[in-house]
Image 1: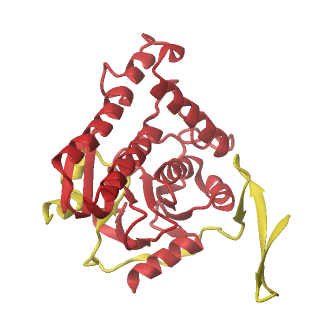
Image 2: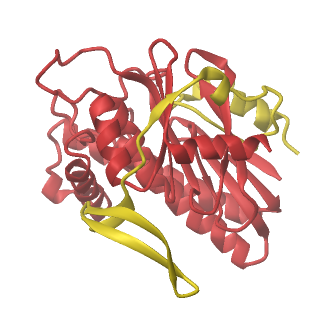
Length: 256
Length: 76
């Protein structure tokens, strides 16, 4: 089965072996809508919008918001500042983290559907990020070519150690990522990479690190590939690509 | 520097350099650099049978003309 619905300013797609009960789809919608209502800056009444407007202190915010902020600060440390929850204008923006967190929550709901015998396995796509169930065969996932959005750049296989694939870039939301100030270049310098895809065991790690590499450039790429258990594919402005051995192997696996 | 030693049948069959980093102090192999790839090494047949499409964050409007949308419309 395949289904999709709009939420969080983007689209959720689910493909699964089995049949999702309507109540389960409703449960999934509620999980995403709750994140949307709390964290979206395009909703003027969201907690994050009220914090940005100075109408709500972070210390008075809900547990959800404070724990997301705490997680974002941990990721900022772990990425040496390449990922940050603060926009250059000072506004607290947790959208880089909460979409992936919502996907992880949806994954728990979909896994429950497996336990209740509704599904055998599933793939979840949200705004260009992909998560698959641990159950089932490896998933074949395409990645859009940032220089031609109507074409696929590549196809890779997501095996049991890489259940998640996240892609960040400037292809459609140039303002989504801001560049880390590296001191040696202008703050608004052109990014090293127009698109970065990261495959990891979990979607939060994949999403945060893809954002961090776009923001931190080649230096962050080297740091993150060295320290983190991830596979990475980057595309630069001229279309040149770089891949870690694991990503190249995942592309090769999808060919056979 | 730490090394991971693989022992099989009483013999050392592999030695891999490890480094301990990160907040969880996990061990990861250090030979994971991203190296240049030729375009033909990366490109796949456009007709490839895929279950999901990844890409940079697209808005609802972007979704409508996206490849993922085409997949969803062809849903079964």
